[in-house]
Amino acid sequence: RYGEAEPLYVEALAIWREQLGNRHPDVAASLNNLAELYRAQGNIAQAVPAFQAGLEIEEWNLELNLATLTEVQRRDYAATLAGTTNAAISLSLQATEAQSLGLATLLRRKGRLLEAGSRSLQQLRQNLTPADRVILDEFVAVRQQLAALTFNPPANLSPEQYRAQLAELEAEAEALEKTLAQRSAVFRAETQPVDIATVQSHIPTDGVLIEYVRYRPFDDQADPANRWGAPRYAAYLLFPNGRMVAKDLGDAAEIDAAVLSLVQALEDPNQSVDEIHRRAQTLDAVVMAPLRESLKGVEHLLISPDGALNQIPFEVLRSNRGQYLIETFEISYLTSGRDLLKLDLIPPSTNNALILAAPNYGVIEEIVAAAPNNDNQRSVDVASLTVSPLEYAFREGRALSALLPDADFLTGRDATETALKQSQSPRLLHIATHGFFLEDSPRRQANRDPDGTAFGGTYEVPIENPLLRAMLALEGFNTRNSGQEDGILTALEAASLNLYGTQLVVLSACETAQGEVVSGEGVYGLRRAFTLAGAESLLMSLWRVEDEGTQDLMVRYYENLLSGMGRSEALRQVQLEMISSDDYSHPYYWAAFVLTGDWRPLEESVANAGD
Image 1 (spheres, helix red, strand yellow):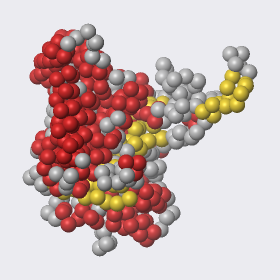
Image 2 (spheres, rainbow, N blue to C red):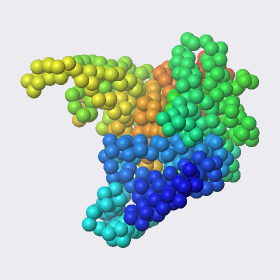
Image 3 (cartoon, rainbow, N blue to C red):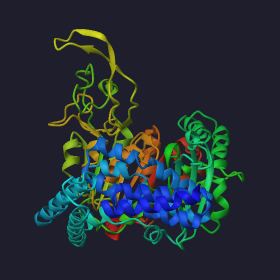
Image 4 (cartoon, rainbow, N blue to C red):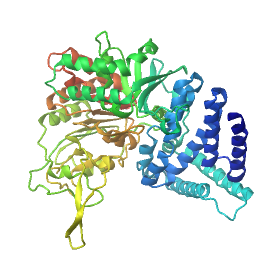
């Protein structure tokens, strides 16, 4: 009875707007319901603008909530939007007219929760003048008032009074935001609006943005209980001329299995290269081959993975012609195409580069029996971790300090957590040490009385923050004693470093790109932490790397960088050399490191530092 339903939906929408203004979540829900009615009738021309209007309101409220809620509340609120995200993607894959709707939604929402969960506000405050901090505090306070008024309308206000108060607070917030944006490049980078045209303008002329997404398809013709299908993957291609391509790639369970199979092979230096090629070709057939027809003339892939695809180097994928993807394309990675908007907003730092290599981990005097019993516990497994000295990490640091003679080179007992935390926006940051990502195995504890007596079975310990399970080992790691620190830099701590203006962070260590993969959010670990701290680009490893081979790769990489190559092209050339070599042609050696963020050459001031 669609004909009878439509005027009732329109009337309901008018009532919500009259009572609650134009940006209340109930207005968005009403618009989305109307869009679904049009979609069910096959009327895409009317469904798209109605859905777009609803999503715009959701975006406004999402920004408001992410800025004012606690971490748990943010997660809960973001979960309420999963349905419209999946519905927008489903519609865009079914109807060409809706492609921009799906891509715009993805660009705005992918990775937003993790981004908001960082200490970006604290970091932002550090980069403002005292006068601007006062304005920022006013802005935050007004946003909090606006959120409270939006979601808890006072019962004693008439609709006219309520809308007037909303309008007044909105205008005040917009004025403060405009002032901060004019006075702070960091604030502009954190708050600028996201749209396809702006993202498109930052794509290199020879490149393409590939946004992968793991989504649940929506079928409005199915029984209400079965409208959400099993997860699938899709890819959106955005070209610098504005052309868009959207492709459904297939069942997520099958693709995830192919990813796991390839990862297991790549992490084993004894695995036959032929077997790796077979598995790489299997995965290529489902995540890259469907896109190749659209990639003619493209030289650079800017890849934003999702789900399990965060765990693989796309460089190692094999076409049916027997070529690695790296042999055809330059490849760099983004958490989201939204990251492109931060390019060039923060001036490059002029501070010395910092090389921190081969810390003195300390003689093992005591093994901690259990993880610390407090809110900052890292994982029960970290208690028994000890590490050995890295001979080639020291050689690597020494070689790089010769290439960068003005760099501060810290090694041995000087390579401390304190020194790293006190550094302010080094031009380059290179850390050569041990890295870890600890799995969060299920743990249960006995229920206990206040006197310690166990009773009544056990209870499950809450899942631990993955940003506390990704870490780097620094001076004093084995003894958990390094001055006022413990010698362990977690991802949570790394996110609070001041790296605004740092052009490149290199984590020359094992598993630094690993973390907890969350669909739609990326990787909770060191990868995202250093990006949130302000680094323009990040070079890191996907698995346990070999000490001597890593040193060789890093020295050649910096030689290429200092010759003027781009940050991703410099890595590509080293990897192509390794593929052709006798010692390092196995993908285990050459494919472990990937570059995320800005792919372009370093600023001239850094590139000339080795002259």
